[in-house]
Length: 554
Image (cartoon, rainbow, N blue to C red; front, side, top):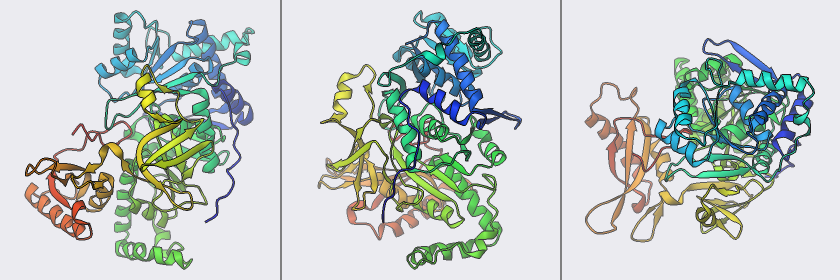
């Protein structure tokens, strides 16, 4: 398997150069499309995006916000994106806030990040007004919408644009430091307290261009994303990485309208996370079943690997009639990251002609570390390291070095020091690199089930088997002490059954069936990996906003 050169992509050192560059290069090409609650479409060109960023930048400078920390509290929107670009363009620091958190947690995020200004959407207007009244360090609150008496997005853009028309040329002359702090991301906090990751302008922009250097995105290609902007994957790789290529991006800020907007936009590429692909996979099998092709599909998938080796794995004729329109009619490529993706889902979509490209990233690395490529991928892997990024394995842990690695954790020098070893960032993820350079992830070090014999088991490995049971919607594998002897541990699994497939059945019936399926799984596992305990969960697992299960919050 031979690698090939990275694709040609523009690289920028600062956000303001990025905005100027894409605005000039792609000019009147469509940049961003959004749909309102009624499904009405609004599209902004690259020149419009640049002009709005310029106008808002000038207005923010007049408010004295240069170098200050600005928190953005709101769902994905065009206004959110312009605000981020404007704040970063004037050398200030953006603090994206996770809106799925409680008001108390949002308050703590604002205070811990030293925000001087709050930019908010309608749902958070009261909270932000209360925070400004209570804390003198919060100098300004700015609404992303027009229905509030405080400064708002539209008025500020208009004010700045008017200043530019009068001869204010600061947006064309301002210079910022590529190594300066640009953004503070709060980590998901799946296994511990959320940390504040400091990324420089250089960090995020290296990653912005490295992603499409590995995965080809054509100029004008229609791309859809609904990933939250308050996470690095959602902002950097699903938005900035698309804009640097000149693609046409549709953004969604409401999960209830995700599939509606995607079907209206009809993208060629979709950037998402596994939980959304799980839903799409269920819909795919429903369509296949309604077409009476379930048995044919199952037979094809069983022999597909053998046919691939013979070079004869072309799409069978019965699948060409499957009309999978959940994402429109043009979808050809899906990029998935943020969590583990079941290999069966990759196989299913490949069978209908949709390529799934899986990658791996972590917030501290801005975030992308590795990704499979358009013409070079390996089933089950998380791909090859992106450009400007070195990866090595030490004591089974994935270590990373490069211009994409963070400045450190905000106000946590000791935590920052502990995260590095001889200049290499310790990801906390376990994995290995095969002889062809592909990276494989095997689990989180903190999640390992450790036995008193010294043997270790990654929960993710066992979870993949359990998720293959049709009755299982979600599951979490963990180590359970037997109580017979100190340190005596067995593998246990907590299961949330699929409510549709188990409708009308008692808990006893569901548990009995799942236990029978697990007995079959256990036959092929070594003794220490066998699942010994099975418990049912009445509701879905608590998750982060990137849909990872919070293992220590169940």
